[in-house]
Amino acid sequence: MDTAQANDQGLNLDRETDAPLLHERIHALTQQATVQSQELERLRRMADARVSLLELELHCMADAALDASVSPAVQQVAWRAKQVARDDTPVLIFGEVGVGKEWLARSVHRTSPRAGQPFVKLNCSAIAASAIESELFGRAKDTLSGVTPPKPGRFQIADGGTLLLDEVGELPLDVQAKLLRVLEDGSFFPVGSDHVEHVDVRIVASTRVDLDDAIVAQTFREDLFYRLHVFPLRIPPLRERLEDLPTLCAVLLAQISWRTGRRNVHVTPAGLEKLASHSWPGNLRELANVLERAMLLSPAGDLEANVLDLPRRREDTAAAQDAPLVTLDEMQRRHIARVLALTRGRIYGDGGAAKILGLKPSTLQSRMERLGMRRAGPRAAERAGLDPARAAGGDGATGVGGAGAPS
Image (cartoon, rainbow, N blue to C red):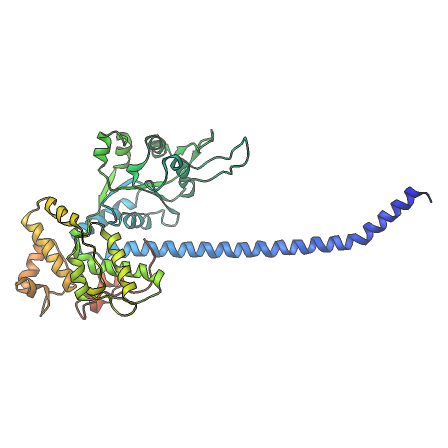
């Protein structure tokens, strides 16, 4: 036997010896990959379930804040939002910083035929102008280097659902032009791509700036304004809806409880009185900060007035002096609303709104009816997660029912 034949026979013997080990190793790796794949699928389902639960809680908080409102202005906004939710009409929400524009947008999505599809938000003022186009429309893969992977934009992620463009007035003009095309025919080009994409997305936009002034300043396209301004909604600031303080405190405390783990936290009547004395330039966002700070300062029990740390601003006085003049009826409505917020809707008896205002209960009720006002009852309280007895004036604190999610 020559050397070549001997080497071949030795190689065959090595292959025969190594083959079972090789098959065993392949089998072990296959099993390991299967286990890892099953674990990844389990984690994905768990993440999807958590996201769905969080979205549900967010929508429920938004619905509670609107449905339980006793403010005529908010009730009108909520009614209009439900009417427009049935169609795909673009909605433009106006309001100061922190008034709850995202809550209203979520409510529109929640009551629309797209409720089972994604609700996606983009804060146009929080992203650099150089990056916002790819955030909105996505980015194609870099075909030259192959290093940069493709990235879906908010429009692709929201396909079939609703996209909230928060602070839409901050969009750069070149991005406004691309947004206008999406509103016209649902098509766009991702950044770095020459292939058009089509999406089916319902647009809800919000802004705190006066877009008419932005058009005059040539920072906002007039044609885009009219595309978005099909169905405008304006949310009143907190200072114009103080009668909603008990309900809003309940919703916001439920939201905060997700992070703190505390349940059944209330604001006392004295605490509500202190809250009603503030002008709330930061609206619901400022109120949420005050309540969370109070929970940290009061680790147990209800939130008393002494733990509600309200900021003192010289701007508040200036804002009050510059506030537009209103009718006598509007002044009466606001004052009655503030007193009702302090009494948690109670009209009769010592400590009731009628006693504080120096009116007969029947006179106060007649005046409220003439002014288009109503007080919170047990049903409204239950929708907001409140104890109905407390809402009716039983022991006068703001209750929280169940956990909430950030809005």
